[in-house]
Image 1 (tube, rainbow, N blue to C red):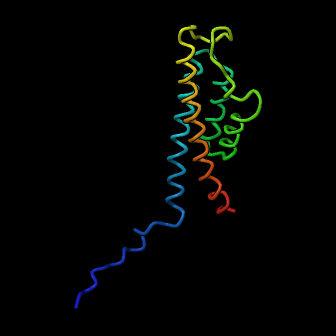
Image 2 (image 1 turned 90 degrees about the vertical axis):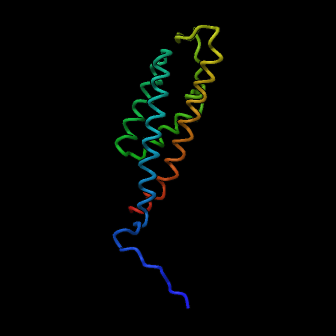
Image 3 (image 1 turned 180 degrees about the vertical axis):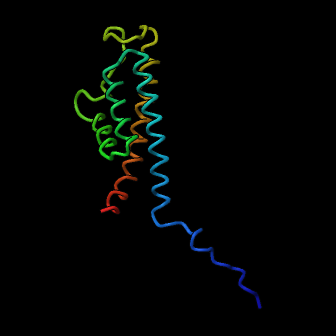
Length: 134
């Protein structure tokens, strides 16, 4: 006859329900902040200071753990005049040489996409956590 070698883990080593989600939320929030900071730096480097400041304000909200920070960030991706409508070019006063416009704007779109993806990831994690705390 075989013996059962299974020994249950002590209660203090078992994961607490929801703790993994909170850890994941913290990690994702940090990733989002880093991506936002990259985007703001990129915008500043090309003299698009209005949107860089707007991103900085969202970073502050998100860093403070304010759930509306992510919602506000995602709102900047919608409607007429959203951040996705920005085109970096010399004619608009940006620090971009005409020969580099395509490459710079492709890089900008990649940064925007990364921020948008990370923001949606954080938002998906925030929804259940906010509901549980009520």
